[in-house]
Length: 161
Image (cartoon, rainbow, N blue to C red; front, side):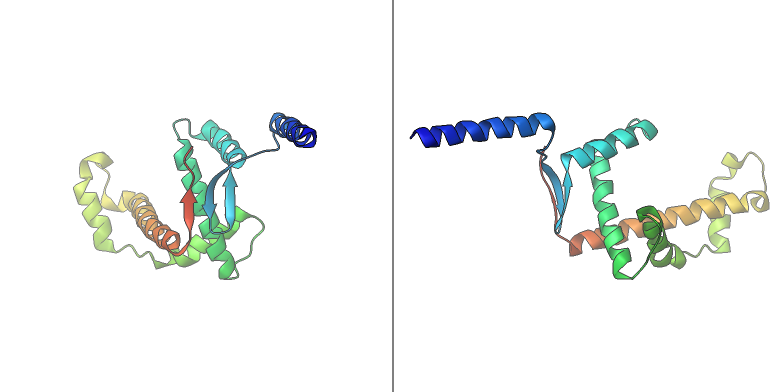
């Protein structure tokens, strides 16, 4: 009986010390066999909060999940790079951006619908800006669809806070 009580007390002291030392962390999300811990989430959240003040922890967590999925997909295509950002960007360029085609009539339709926003500029003067905007809109829509598909193919579990 004394041994059990001593062992329990020792275990409590070790756990308390570990918690105080920051050694115990909890998992916020799983992406298949990859885990995102609370400390990773908070580190990324605090870093992102400085750039985007109104971002939520949920948005940061979903971004972290998306990055894991995109990186995994990129690596499965044997895409290499000097860092994770470049690997993901290359994958998005190959898998998403390369399929975007903006037609002349799309530019003109957008210009005609938003003519008052261009302050009297002609369509030829703002064509590059319109094309850039339409490309980004299409890339975002395609990327959202791709991420939805990648999430369906993976086991993603978000733990409640």
